[in-house]
Length: 320
Length: 143
Image 1 (cartoon, rainbow over the protein chains, first blue to last red):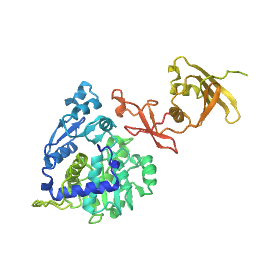
Image 2: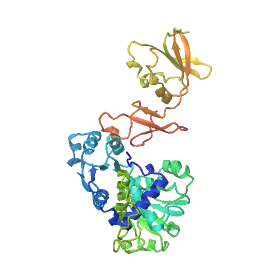
Image 3: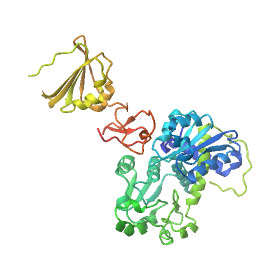
């Protein structure tokens, strides 16, 4: 039985297959509308989440399956002190696959070791959030048509942002990916990512403080939030914060085909005025997350839809 | 000169870094070896190391987890004694995985709350001897 704990659980070849499946689902949703009929997804969320939980539920419902679960630890038996290992043994009797979010790092791994059904890590503290990374990779691949030969700017909190670390880990496996790491001094990428991931994989990168300087060279701008509490003092925060807010003026410096991504939720790091720019793809990114989760559910359940069976295309369906 | 007699059956752990023998004693849980005689020699003169510690353990063979010893210090030499003779010298290497020897210090790790969960560390960088928690991947830094 296969689980999904980290984006690196999949080889590049397997990722390509997963993204190809997501693309086919996105283009031909009707073909997959009954693929999971009779199957149940348990969403075990020990901490609140809007997008990830609903994205998983939407994915399973679109596959014709059903969902059950809980949305916080308070409404689960964890409040009575039940261990993750015991909970997953119980859930294994109720559902066919489980998506688990837990504030403690490694909890989904513990669950997978005791589970009778595939477990998907839907985020474990500051550790891993593989389906966000799969969403990011699929978005880049479907919008740019490639994951190699790109220049990606990662902007904001690069020190604590697990999303960014995970994306770097995934992208260094592709050739000619150049990383522009845009952050204040306090929030620079940790040395273990710089040395053990970037340098170990011979990836090229540069570290800069100002977003404007890098805009013209980027194929992708991946924005993250810069939180006030991460700074040592308020003076530094006030001095730096505007550098990391994406505005229409900064967008004017970028390539016409650059794309802007963000794991969301956005607070104020992207001005609302940028939403109307066709290069702003963060809402599209969240939408595409459903398709890659559908592909992941099908893959882990071992369900194959015969691609030879012709299916009617959906009116208005967008190509991936 | 202090003399300690040889042992009939058991292990002699030699070339322990001076001052580290009590830590080795704790890691190996030697206090839990019932009915075994243990001699700890500290700060003995050594041509190779200057000074060293030695532990002699009179116990049935197989009572000690030599894999753990490889994690503690793979420069330690182990003589295996049977019928008053050295029958082999074990070469220690870094174990790929160690269980319930060290604890994860990350307060956000599932091992901090999950009942009866083994503390498992995996060797991720043999060159720099880095072990990471199997669950949260936090590097262990307290060796």
